[in-house]
Length: 322
Image 1 (cartoon, rainbow, N blue to C red):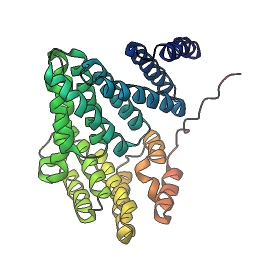
Image 2: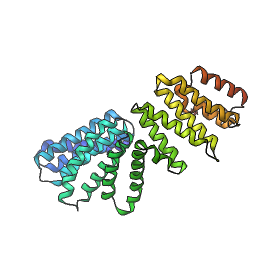
Image 3: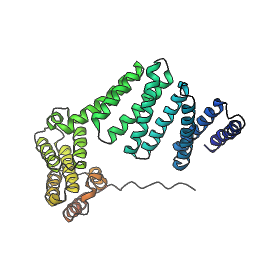
Image 4: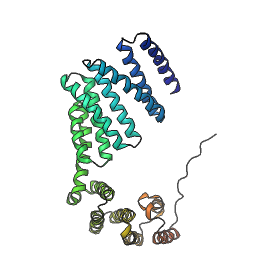
């Protein structure tokens, strides 16, 4: 990586000299901006975020100046749009989901106009597709699934036919997530594997939105559903215990009652011989129980469980050889 950056920086230094000697030649400024953009991508890929941000911002500054000076040149507008898109990706990659949205919007606003003026401009179309794509992913992570669906639709329209099915799947996931949050009946009409995934999405969204009554009702509905199953009943009971534990973490006023509901299901599966060594090791690390792991009742349950089962050793982090 260092060698690659060094090569780019050699070119960059040469371009800096050329832009000073020949400030009226926009091509050199455009190439200089591209070198900043490319180095930014390399730094971002290696986790050097401070250096990456500096490079991205310098690329944006140069490309904005070119676009303002030569507004009739679509290449410069396209390149600026790509920089906005890249910076949105960069911001989102650091976990700043909401902060990434304005950058994607800047890219879309610019590239949409360029692409609509000339649909044969494949580069503008690709960057526009990538901007919708990045924003759709940000919306999904922000649980703004209805907005994500709209952006996935645009991604599909702008993608080659051979890639559309992949994005259709992502669109359907967002659509189903939105329906799952809005309508519990929709969730329970799905095949079991999809249903459990949608339940997780629904619970996460409801708890984050502080819709406690709906969250607990969802856990109770699932717990009742598990008792009607003839196969994998104990696996599903365990999953229901996870949901009650999540509720207990988020709803302080009813925490003790929800811990009791979770433990009742865990004791039920324990009495059925569910906890072998592998499953006992799993519950020791299951993040769904982290928030109640120090609760006295959960501690007592785990003490009893560990005393009755020969537990597999927890995986240890490998030490790097000298």
